[in-house]
Amino acid sequence: MAKTPDRSTKVTALRRQAEEQLRVAKRDVAAMPIKDVQQLVHELQVHQIELELQNEELRCAQVALEAARDRYMALYDCAPVGYLTLDLRGTILGVNLPACAMLGVNRKDLLGEPVLRFVAARDQATFLRHLREPFVQGISHVCEVDLERQQAAPVSVQFQSVAVPDESGQHARILTALENITGRKRAEALAREQQHGLEQKRNLAIRVGLSHDLHDGMLQSLFAIGLSLETCMRDISENPKKASVTLTYSLGAMNAAMREVRIFM
Image (tube, rainbow, N blue to C red; front, side, top):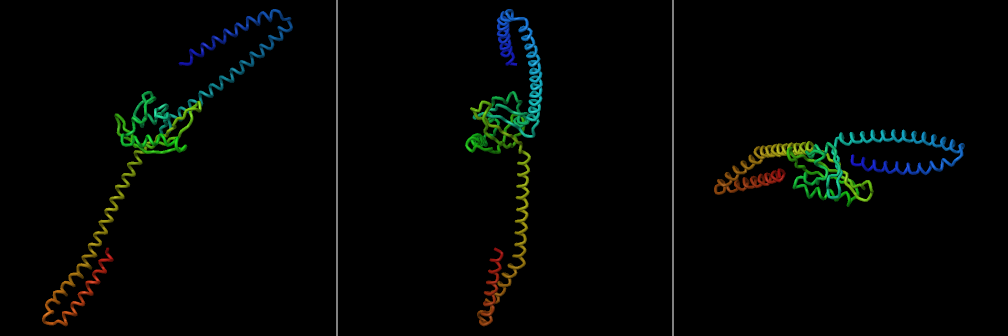
């Protein structure tokens, strides 16, 4: 709508110029022979038809461009991911409807706003580094942050950004694809919890098995060694030879028990 007055002014100025040239041409035509005038009229009629054909081609081209623009806007606003166009400071220059839904704000209220205001405080430093990386590396760069929304639950998103020149080719802009990864994050957290639970159950099973092995093997061996040593103590004074044999047996059993402990360890 803002371009209409400017275009109207140009058309008016062009018409004045054409009328002025026509007044000059009329004086020239009045001095021409009839034959030349007829030839000039023929050429003008042919030129008029050419202009009408060109005008029809331009009209068809305009209709095709408008249809292509509408298809692009439909694809842009119905994409499965959000799209943002940012300047070097992270100000939002363009945004599609999925990105508006992720940020929880209408499009008209997002344009001109810094996207950093929606990033969780703990992730803002990470996001600022992400804005610089496309210019430093010259390639697409990815980061994952949490977004805080005014009247909705926080969401986890993935930014994938690349730096491109604007229409003039002088100033760089950042094109960003925004994907909601909240479901994936929850699934990963659930998988970690399940893995942790499985590890705890496995460790408990190992401990129970070791406990049974120790009870059935080691404790019985130690109990038998203890009985042998008690017998040895009674026989030291009355039957030293028998006590020596018992002590030797007990030492052997003790060494065997120590080897078994090392195996468990």
